[in-house]
Length: 311
Image (cartoon, rainbow, N blue to C red; front, side, top):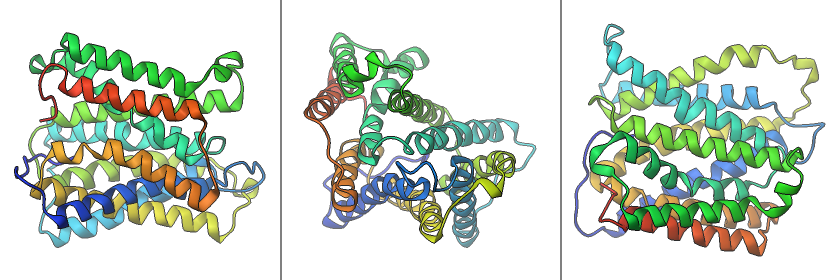
């Protein structure tokens, strides 16, 4: 969530290499979550509350080390404006969406969970239309939003609509909810007061971690049946996508641009699908592939239908 404009111009090979690494880290979060919750095995795996508290606490600790090494600090507690946005960002970018995705992945494949996040820009476009005067939807961008949501409807699938109380359907509703929270966090970040990116990230990940602690303590350890692989998934989630990827994101935003990094919306679902197939032999249906194509087409139209909306 960097608060600075990156450099423009042609991207170097190292920029693209770091971009690919960042996409891989974020895509890998879905595979690590699957491992932590032991998807499809109701008798094993870690509860969502423990996965959240573990990954966010580890991520916050790593970010604190990075922030202090950079000589930065959090805003003073008397700075209510910045702390208000840090609190809201912690909830909307981490606590709520992570809980929904983690719970959903007990039922659905990691690659399907990643596909839903491709729709984040569609919700951002709608929210920005009402929140920012310079982001009004044009006829072309509105067409893009409609196209993208048609893809979401296809991704949801007719079978889900016929059994709204099934575990898979409820899980997909959770994924849509997580997508909406990610979009809200993007809108909040745009309107945030200026502050160092590392301080911003450390602050909201720390807040998100603290919020999850009471819920983790409510879980009876006697009901949890987990082994080292499940805990390894949590540690991986904390160190890689929750901390290192955030630091890498800030490095890239400084040397490239937010527009360039918005391409992760295209690359992450593809990488997640590849990882899902390699690691777990996950495959997607033909309607999921059509849905993904419609979502990406809709995102492109929403961004460029009335001019470049990616600044």
